[in-house]
Amino acid sequence: MESVPGTGISWEIRGDTLYLTGSGDMEFRTRPDGILDIPWYYLDFIHVDIQDGITSIGAEAFHTSDLVDITIPDSVRGIGPLALCKCQDLKTVRLGKGIVSIPEYVFADCVSLSEIELSVESVGYRAFENCSSLSSVRLGEGLKHIGDMAFAGCTSLRSIAIPATVESIEGNPFKCCSSMESIAVADGNTCYRSSDGALFDSEMKRLISAPGKVRVSIPSKTLGIGDYAFAGSFLQSVSLPDNIVTLGVGAFSDCTALETVSIGNLRSVPGEAFSGCTSLQKVDLGMCRDIGPGAFAGCTFLEKIELPDTMESVGPDAFKGTGLTEVAIPDSLLEIGPGAFYGCGKLRKATLPFPFGDEDEYFPAETEIEYLEQ
Image (cartoon, rainbow, N blue to C red):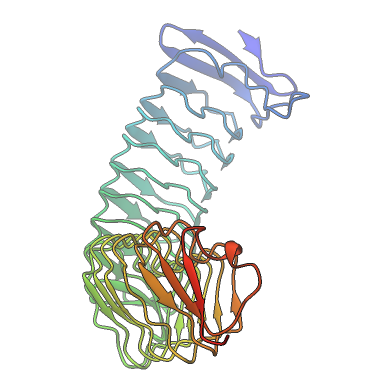
């Protein structure tokens, strides 16, 4: 057997199995080119046998390997970031009792993984992102933290139960979970609640997540919608109630069935809010003042937009790649960001109250610019 340099761990491959024996932490030296020196990285194996006594699995240890299953012994207390990322044939994972946290990207893009049981305290940032076959996640009592986008893009996940012990949820762990029907929070949780299958904070003042097929009636006490809260859902129409005063980044991004939007009392549409809504045709901006970067980027069916006379700024790439045919800029507008209307192949006319400087920064070269003040 060969040793992993600087550790008490030895390794060899026999048949289709990688055998790891010894004791202590698994750590890899960094080569001069910045790449971790993982001795088995380019070798072929589909199983791994980890001896009890090894206390950690190093970062990227099995990254992109052909593993189909892994059993982690109880002696292992930690797993490094990306340790099993992009193991596209991985179907079975058995976690030992020593694992306390699942760090960032550990199982990201494991597209064959269909179920997982997690008796840990923390699930990290993008830990299971794009595990497209993952249909069953069992979160054990004792879980305290769920990281942003932890299960983002898990398109087979239909429901999830959040234990009473969870104290912090960062961002939206369930972004673009297109099959999601219900997020349920256990009775006794003092930090979060669920209603109509959607996830809220404990006072229901902020809607955190309502992806996929979740259909939620927004309560009158709710004041804000979180980042990417509805991203990838199948909504066809959005009419925000007047009580909503804040909207998160990308809140309705990639809602490809969405056709009509009314923003209610919102004064600002944040970045990416409706980006990628390829069916969007009608937008009522109410008394909006600001449109953030990329807010409507990629809305290819959006041919008309009326910017209200309350509008003060349009951010970079705000309408990039939309189907707009013409646009009128109100005289209240003080700022247009670079590329605000780039990629609008049908945009032939823009009416401006006065020159904004170099219009080539904002509009396609084919757009005819007309000024109201001569």
